[in-house]
Amino acid sequence: MREYLDASVFFNWVVMLRADIDGAIWLADDDEEGRFYERCAHPSGRVVPTPKIAVEVLRHVAESGTKGVVATVRHSFAEERGFGGSIFRPSVGDVASLLVLSESCMRVIEGIGGLAWLRACEKDVGSIRSKAIAVACFFERLGEACTSAGVVGIGPRDFADYIAWDVLDIDWRGLSRTLQDRGVSLKVVEEIRRLRYGADPYADITQCDGVSVVAILALSTKWLRPRGISPMREISSDELLSMLRITFDLEELTC
Image (cartoon, rainbow, N blue to C red):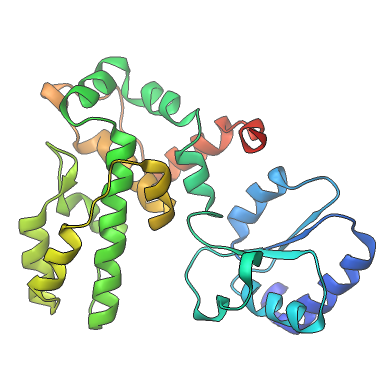
C-alpha cells in the first residue's frame, strides 16, 4: 500500500498526528529499524515508518513550521543540510551501531565463539569489536573513494577477501591492487591507510555503518582462528544482528 503513497501524503498524516501526540514524532526511513525504534520511543511519542522518503517528508514538515518531528536515516543525503539536529545519520541513529556498542554484544559473541576462542582473539589481535569497527571505517572511506572515482566499491559480501585475518585488519596489499585495477589511485588508498582508527570505538562508530561492523564480526566466526582455536560455531550476519536485537537492554538508552 505504501508504495503508492508519496511524501505529501505522509506529511499530511504527520501534521494530523502532531495535533494529537504530545511527544516527538520519529520518522524512520528503514522499515526494519523502524520496528526496533518503536521499542525505544517514549510512550508519548510516535514512530512513523517512512521508508526512503523520511528526509523529503521532514522537508515538508520544516517548511510548514511544524515542530517536534525528527528523522532517522541510514545513508548520507545532501538534502539533510539545514535540518540541524532533526536528522540522525549513521551511525548515530543506526540500530546496528547501538547494538554493537551495547553491553550485551560481547556476551553474545562469547556465547557464539566460546570463551577460549574469544580470549585467544583478545591476546592475538586485541578487542575484536574495536578492530571490526576500525576495519569497517576503512571500508567506508574506501567506498567513498570508489564512489568519487565512479567505480564499483567493496561490498560486505567481499569483505572476507580483503581482511588480513591473522591481525584482523585490512589486507592493504591485495585491496590496493584491486582498487588500482578498478581506477582508484594508489595515492588515495595510501591517504586512507594513514587514517587512525581503533583507539576509540565510540568515536569510530560514527564514521561507519554498523551493519558493516556486524558483518565483520560474523565473518570472524568463520575466518578468525587465533592460535589455531576455532569458535564453537559460525554465524551469519543476519543471525548475529537478530541475536543482538533480542539481547539488547533498552535501559542502556537511559544511562
